[in-house]
Image (cartoon, rainbow, N blue to C red):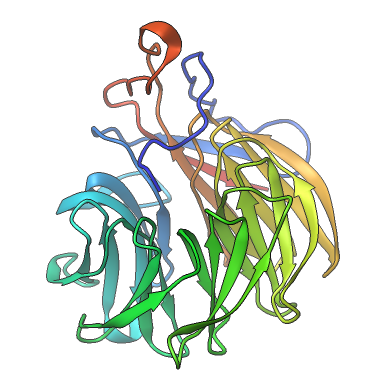
Length: 336
């Protein structure tokens, strides 16, 4: 996704206070100033190393999620977007959409040890444990590049049925992909490296973030039309939609609590409970920070992380992107 393709209100954003909100449920428990120039995109939690990887345009920042301290910065990217971890190989992989490449990173040294050509506008990225391959979502190319997680070699290209945004794996031989241009979901067979099914998730428009409840075969597509579209992956059909905020870019599902989340650029995270695989209740709308459209979940602690910055005034005429105030980039930690 675009580094600044978030929903921003005209007013400048204000950092949330670090003190917990009143009442039960999720709240912003801490706000850590990180600073640094440039936009941002996906967050990815390295659960084994207890590190948070944040894509920041020309680099990937590696941060201690407990303190916000910057552990390292991995340079050399041209529009960094997403990060995926292949722990068995000891590697992380990060997309660089501006030059259509994927960087392979050594998880011990945090150094780039390889670079592989993918396709135009490689954006979202995931690791599939079934095939032990990396899959990139190449937006403008309408494809997915498949990369060997050990060697970093490009194994081939999957033609998708539209422009992809984000994907997830079920760990059983399937990868599911939001097709932003069609308001649909593609099912990919990872062995044949082909799309085997597509279904509409209308009235969802422009699906971006995607999460999965593996146990119940449910997919959670965050839609720019202001809903979460929930699909039955086994049946290949839409189950229901639930209202969320505006400018969504990330969704997550916590199997431990049966909660699904949608983070939105309007400064909200919608929290919904899976009452049953076909019924969902919105239990909370958490105020975060304008521009905080991407998000990560720590399933071990049920902690949420999101990031944003303060913004200046919009350009004259109200068109274009507002500038980011220098060194205002921050990490927000949400707990229950």
